[in-house]
Image (cartoon, rainbow, N blue to C red; front, side, top):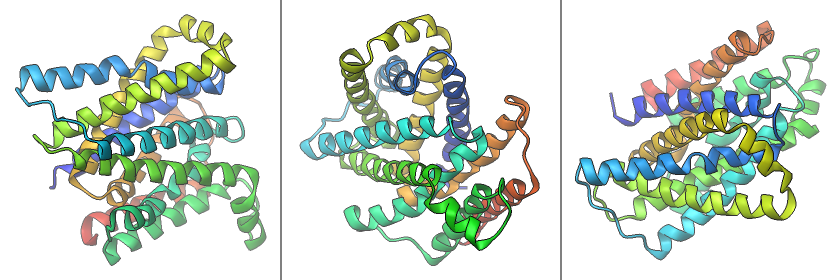
Length: 301
């Protein structure tokens, strides 16, 4: 098994935990605050990852270059906006379905990878992405009478447009992070990923903190009162991002994000066991299609 596969699965599991905790935080703070804690409380852990790799493992700290910094900025801003939209989406539909609309991210990452990095994917990968996206579409209409009209309406409605915009921004961010990490001259994929994470999350923390002080200073008090769960969000978020960055240093962003659809399985489990949300047959069928797409990716992609 190639190393990027278990790293991606672990990152997807950690990201699901982070998303579940962020939804929980929506009861204590607004969307901006819940978005910020992912970055602000993740920064100490990003510093820790780099310090451990440098001091304990003895890996040299790579020297950032202008290309690296540019891609970090593009990815950082894209991820902030995508995360904000995704959390905002939780206000309209349940936890599992709310995340489903953003799952066109792998297909969009493949397009952006082709445009910006001249990367191509195999026919098997395209098929795997298509199957998974079909599963997402099925989930998106699982709560309405099934018809072509409802299918179309679900794809152009407010929720769908917000989710698709989130997926677009996540796709851009994924490609940007791969470009940033691979632009560093070693020493290895772990240190490149950790350095990319550190610079990215520091940039995101500064941007989000400045925005809150300017526009929503009351959120600072809400965050301070919920610092314990926020710390968990930071830990899970930083660990998941470290995993994503390592996997995307080793493999194309679109391929990594296609396998990352396995997060929907973890999401459904969270919906049932933690949020006590009912999942119907259509949503289960969509989940099965997502799993099928992942299997195609691993077998022939």
